[in-house]
Image 1: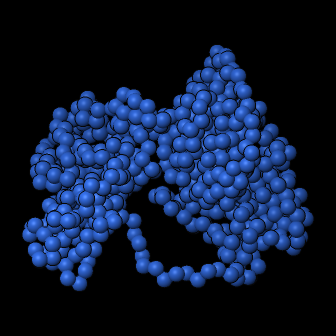
Image 2 (image 1 turned 180 degrees about the vertical axis):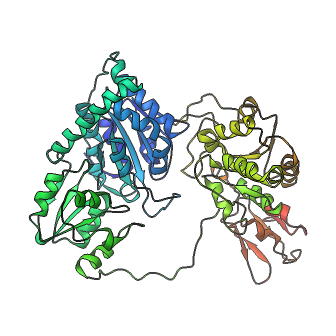
Length: 576
């Protein structure tokens, strides 16, 4: 039966058909929907782990224990999981192990443009890259058997456009895969130096064998056309190539590592000019050139930044302009916090107090945007706490009086706890704000260990953030409602002045968790003095008008934050 599927949905389907038993992941756009769709299938154990490192370790254990396993993450999440990834390449597997990584060319929802293909090469792990939803399902399903045949984890690389595009998928039957017995074998599974040295030789032999067999595995495809131009390409770029250059000869690499070099050489001999079309880094191009294959053009034509387009390929390779719809003249629309977002009040107060704010990854990163303009630095998950500590240690105790770290509840669980321990252990004085909105907001409201719900919304143990902070040695922990701005301001003044580590938990659920609107607010024009103090919070529901301001009832969540901003009591419930 055929079904229209997202690429991510198709990956989940492929794993389900392959008889996967355990899926452990951490949400991260553009990979999140894979695990969410896995949770819809009965049978496999599916979980959100605290972070990607734990997720991959759980999947490694499941594989060693004889059950097919998968772990899914975005590209920066693979950095977090790199430690177990590089070593499980040495141990190999028992049952099939697939690691799905979703790259984000163009940085639609990411802090960098990382090319995860280099992880495959560096860790000596085969990588497959599908170009549509059908291949996403098929490659995933086959990856488990390939993993077992070659005793290796398999990396499956998705990109934003494949992960979030829909195409038809032929669904298959579910394999009934028996649990393999675990066989005690310390030379294979215990990576002390002596064992690891022996296993490294196994890894090299395995990759050499896979390189020899790469062309015959069926992931690559040669499409001969006009022999004047030959194009080697992969993944998303293949779709653009077929649209822009339908007459060209194409070698589509479905296995991007190891590259089937003999197949590429044979293809190159059949065409007059050979081009490499790939997004981000010259991963394929550099290997072809190193193998002595003449490449007429690659990154010199297309660059290393952002996404490719069919129009750009047609222009660079054929000098042809492709017809495109004229760009509409639309105003800029920067991302903003939602109306009623509890983070808005926090950032308004931080800005008011002129504090230096080290930020983190999540919705609250938008606190850097005007008019709140509160976040001063953001690097990666969990980094805010360590950065605040580092600023203090570089600048002295006086720095801690005007510096705070901001981190969300899910991100704190992910990788903030160790930073807090570092502050306590190394006698720091930093103040940390945990913005607890009871969800993992930016990736689509996934539960986390602090919510008391599993991925299937089953009740489970709820991590007590206050008790956790106290347990690692923070003696000054207080909880506030960020919409009580006076209390929040007082808490910030007291804790930043304290010569000891402190944590303020700003607790209020994400406004989107409860979408029921009881009423909206309106401006009483007779009382309004047009001071526009309410505009300082940057709420999308509040709009400038020639005479004063107007509150859009379709956007207003009646949070009441603007009411606190108005010194003239000019904002009231609609209908009063």
